Image (cartoon, rainbow, N blue to C red):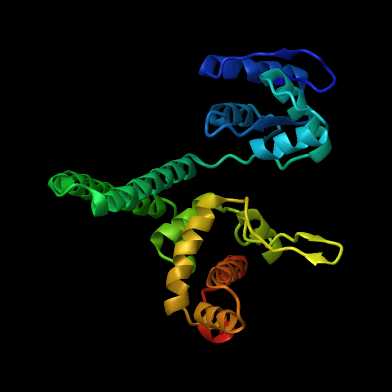
Length: 297
């Protein structure tokens, strides 16, 4: 459903190649200042790419953010037509950032990393089932585990091959991995899912990933600071990297032990170290300098 700001009617297009082509032609005739597309779990990708390739200004926004905007306007009813009209109003007043398409190589790398995460979740689930399954069915689960492990290994090789195809990626990957605790999967995920790394300041990059503590204060009350939203895939690899880092990276280990000694909960200290690691990696990419333990300790 497509709505134009100021018009009460909405028009429908098929979410197919032909429908997206028709939509692109209609939008070029309209010459809009901005087209806002709601994220729908991947179903919006074809529309985004088609409009972007047509040279149209398009932005992708989260469904939750747009729904909150609708509630703030007092719009409680929800239909596709009303959602489209709300998106148009949202675009005018919020002016979300324009969508920047990835290269074909970047799209392939992202797809491989997404599939690897899916297999990792399946592997974890099967290992958990192995603990409680009837003994006679253990071999069935072990067969699936072996298959998943082998497929994850194959995908790791595919990630390696994709990174090697781009000299710039290879250079950035080596730079990121100079920080102890950052492995190939973490580096690849940062390159694919966080291209802004190195171009934003530390507060902006932390907020983008979802590692900036959000204040919840009112009057004399000081609420508990929490992190959230942002790019969950990036947070996931940073979490695993930080778990390793607080053991083997002297900079992260020092900060973690200091925070725990000051009475911080271990989970809070771990998130703070995740933010520290992200800040360091951001500075490394900005300055194009490898990790230096002596200067950062």
